[in-house]
Amino acid sequence: MIESWQQFLTQHGARIEHGVVLDFGNPQAEQEAAARATVMADLSQLGVLAFSGDDTGTFLQSQFTNDVRGLHPDTAQMNGFCSAKGRLLGNFLMWRNAGDYCLQLSGDIKDAVFKRLNMFILRAKVKGRDASDEAVRLVVAGPAAEAAVRSATGLMPDDAMKVAHNGQAVVVRLAHDKFVLSLAPGSAPAVWNTLQANARPVGAATWDWLRLIHGIPMIVAATVDQFVPQMVNFDLINSVSFQKGCYPGQEIVARTHYLGRLKRRMYLVHLDGDDAPAPGDNLYTTDMGDQASGMVVNTAPAPGGGFDLLAVAQIESINGGQALHWKSVEGPALTIKPLPYSIT
Image (cartoon, rainbow, N blue to C red):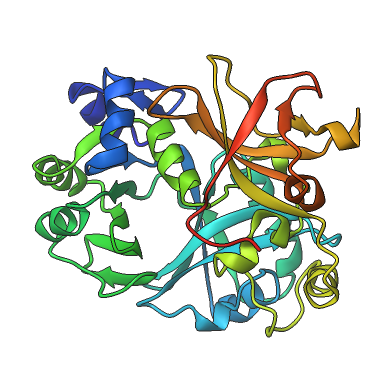
């Protein structure tokens, strides 16, 4: 986190540990606000990798699951990076800013993804860098988000996954009521102060909850190389293209799609109680016995108590009415909740 920005947030009531905003003094109230009102959150816990150079578009097209040729200065896209076995090593929101292709991803995998991508650059005219602390990044979500962002930045992309720029700010519209802002550090405090007229500041976990209840996964260190893209619903959230050319793992991803061999999907589930599951935790169903039937992808405290999770699980078990259990077959049961898109 940029030191001056951390000082600013602390002065405005943020509790920060290891560069992550935990909350602004009342996490329960922040969670409740996220469910019904407009909120904003700092995104310093996420990393940003930037790539530039004459061959950048072609290079990234050969590495990622989505069609980078469709990424223009006024558009954004969700994308992924796979191993040769077709398993996700990371996923990210992508946009372009001046000569850079920017990738926003989980901070705990940033260095590993950067190192692996650099292995493939070879003689291509591409240069990469860690751009995490070059800008302040915020997310604004809720019914008044559009008005808040327009007032604070003077920018407003006209549709989902569109981008607007003005030299001091980049605004990525994720949906009609959700925006990611990348701000010049010097202008960030003024933007924050203007946003506060319409949006309540919240901690990172509250934003995680908003993201996961909309079925958007984030690969973190504990889940690297665990999931084929379709397992985490990439094909349902426009994060994979089946018409583009080759990339690492493409044959396996395509075979899964065209031959219909997908056995696991990602579900939104709820767990009551005070104990928090962690990404990478195994889940179980009675029909699978002691063999794990699924895995936790992401988790966050739910506004009404307990935890909401994104979890990959056996389709056959879920369709057969089997309950998912955390830790073991005898462990706490999870309740399946509806996603905003169909997984059938």
